[in-house]
Amino acid sequence: MNKQTTKNFALVLALSGILFLFGMILHPNEQSPDFVPSSMWTLAHVILGIAFVLIVFGLRTFQLKHEDLGAFGKFTVGLTSVVSILLAGFIFYFEAFIVPIIASNSPTLLEETGPLFQGTLGTILLVTFAITSLSFVFLGILTIMKKIAHPVAGILLFGTPFLAFAPPLPYIIGLIGGISLGLGLTWIGISVFKNSG
Image (tube, rainbow, N blue to C red; front, side, top):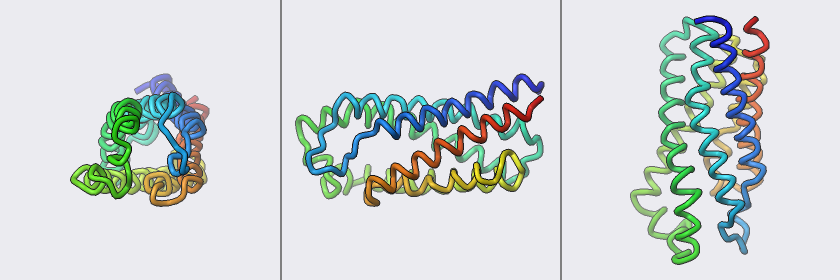
């Protein structure tokens, strides 16, 4: 692949990080006692859903920047792509558009102890968020190991578990984790763009 292709995918990765930052900054505190999903909730989740779609394409940056990623690298990029696809669909459709309808009509369904999150959906989400956390931590390790970008950019991806598990972690911890993830993706994308000739 030529340098321009690498730069293009790097820009997509950087854009995914920037959108992730905006989505996190706009995201209302759902742990607030008077929280009700609003148009800001929908907007934040649409932006986050688009960010995850762009992450899927932006991950190609890793393969283009370092042709020999090895088994760990290929596994990491593949796993991160799969969870990003799953989360793009979940966040874009369920979180952005279905949650506000449920909240307006049957808010008890959305409680942490309610039937949605105590049932099969809750288990699936728990497993998905755990795998998401691992995949982005692995991506941070890959960034450091293969010198894709500055090590701090890789370390910033380690904030993903804090985002994935808020709640039950406090909102501010999740916000910091999300901002950390967005900054890491942006930094990696810009770094690869600048260093691709």
